[in-house]
Amino acid sequence: MTDLAVEVCGLTKDYGPRRVLDVDRFAVEAGSISAVVGPNGSGKTTLLGILALLEPSSAGEIALWGEPVGRSRAADRRLRRRAVMVHERPWMFHTTVLENVAYGPVARGMGRAEAQRRAAEALQRVGLAHAAGWPAPALSAGEARRTALARALAVEPDLVLLDEPLADLDAQHRAAVEQIVRELPSRGTTVLLTTHRLETAYRLADRCASLIEGRLHDALPDNHFSGTVAEADGEAVMDLAPGCRLHLATPLRGPAHVVVDPRTVILSRTPPASSARNSLAGRIAALAVEGDRIRVTVDVGVPASPRGVRGVPIVALITDRSLREMRLVLNEPIWVVFKTVSLDVYGGKSP
Amino acid sequence: MRWTLEQFAEALRLLGSLDRQVLGALALSLGVATLSTVLATAAGLPIGIAVGLARFRGKRLLTTVLHTLLALPTVLIGLVLYTALSSRGLLGSWRLLYTPAAIVLGQFVLALPLVTALALAAAEGVDPRVRLTALTLGAGRWKVARTILAEGRGAFLAAVVAGFGRVFGEVGISMMLGGNIRGYTRTVTTAVALETARGEVPLGIALGLVLMAVALAVNLLFLHLRRRAAP
Image 1: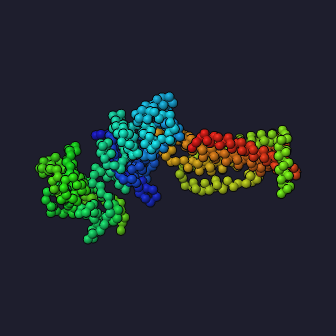
Image 2: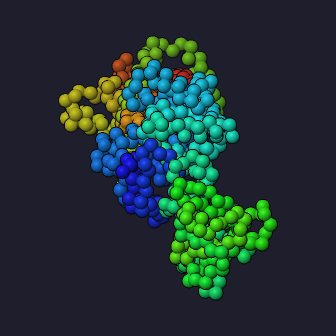
Image 3: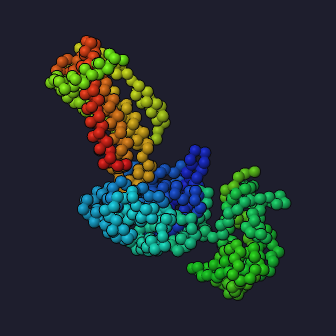
């Protein structure tokens, strides 16, 4: 059994009548890098704020390192001090950059000289040693973000919660920050980050979850489709592309997100004659080994297209054995099949 | 019109010959105003910050009450404290009536709602990320409050300046609780009231000009502090 740094059960957060977060179950392994992927406004920041014990949840249970949150003020304060959250738009105190970074160690009772030594070290790591004496509020957005990262590193937390850590950074600094994040687990720090970019999550995280409209989807954040749910022949449908229509089982109409669990996607060489309502023709665009599974990316919606033309990618996870038995090859025409009930639909408005 | 101008001209002439008594009244005015402002700041700033950051039922009502207290007339404060401090009053045994301490007490009551209300508004005006950042970096309650004070220092300083301005120019409390005793509880404002009542209008105006000059000097000092405090 692995140790869990974060464990969440039945967590909700309401702002007035609006439910902004509704997470059934969520866990982060200690010493791992986890990512929560979702569009802006999906509740990522709220989730991090709650896990950093900066704001209360409306209901649910949270445990940090196996210790339940909310038992006593003193215990919560102790837990809060083991974690640091870095906000997407970090606040810079009206002091120097060095004093900003030394704030955490000083707040935790470290002597000034020792705290500043640690702060200087942290600034070195993010490549801002030269800016130590600058007034912090005058920093650019990217510099402020790196300063905020250094400010978090300086307290040597057990858990660091990074809200969109790579936004506002140019390519060079993005690589540097990614490197720092990657090294954190070896220093004993668990990382939970949010991003609206799938590729960031894939590059950095051991494990990804997706958050849409406040709901956490514990599958890989593949097969997210955003579009409009319309009605055709008395049935809910969403058109991903011309000739590429999803059949949905939902009373919702209007703007919505659809998630298809890649584990439930079936591949077929022949047009399927089954009860599954969704069968789409496409071509195999990519094959990749992912642990003990094979990740098959099928471009659908452009079945007769020449090579290089991209359709809508749908990912299926299959076993090694299925791959061998089916002898799948790149660019081969294939059908993807999934049951309507295996689709999760979020958002939109009730008719 | 002509008469008014004559009074001002005479007042300006008198400015050059203001005597020791005037300086004494000025020193007392400055002294009691400073002390009462310091006390009102010591009490009002923490209360304002605490209420400003807290979320509780009745907060809006409390804020409304506070804003109503801003309209408290100085004569009413004077009257209430007078009845409390007079020898038969509740606090009569303190023997404070007609002493500078009584003026300080009255001015403290006058400045407290103002400093508190402005500190409350200042605390609410501080970016919420300040508190969150301080908390997540491990600050305890006091350190969080101190950080908020530091980040919103311009607005908090403005609360103090407003408090000083309110007490420095008041006359009702000084008159009723101090008694306008020459050389002991006579402040610049009570002196103005007295001289005007006696028909010495130019002298009253001259004293008023002195008062405003000192107020200007004090505010320039605050302006300097505020510039240095930046945010």
